[in-house]
Image 1 (cartoon, rainbow, N blue to C red):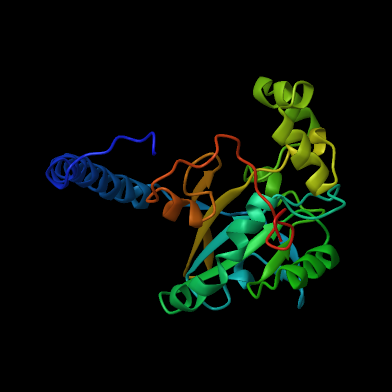
Image 2 (tube, rainbow, N blue to C red):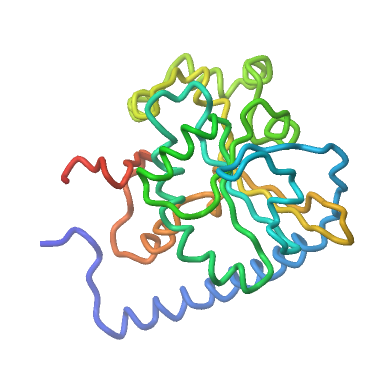
Length: 246
């Protein structure tokens, strides 16, 4: 017998109507937030950054691939990760490829970034079966300039990071083994989406959002929010080829 509340169809409809009002308020707030997001000032990118790609060195402007908007997802895969990228970030990466055709037709180029060297990104991309451009920021100041990674000194100044390093919960210790890096290195990477615009030859930084914002999570989590049972509290994730039951 289920432990969850059980009711009549009439009780369900009353509760669903109340929830619908809250969902409508949430949707309206989301619309206002989207307006504020697009009203943010654009900041010119003055530094000429270079990135390692499968086709060789490219500038930030060249990553737009002829479009006027660039959306990049920064996957946690630092130079010290010996096993692979963050499993949670990999889950999100699994879900990006199908959206690219629609974004491309709406003047948006979608790519992913990581600080690991390009040869390791290319090998991991092949393992995961991804087709999106996977770009390396290895040796560049770009991730530090835009808050996509922290230097060791910066990480030491953040009490929350130091607490996780010194007293990691079990799931975080497991995560450290999954990526093959100490937490002192692993937690310096910042999973984020970052957006740029290109106008009249100039490139502008327009927006950044980082975890734990719900937008920086695998999209299947949005579907799980509509299922009857709550997900586990611990944020455990597995790469698609490493699930324990497969």
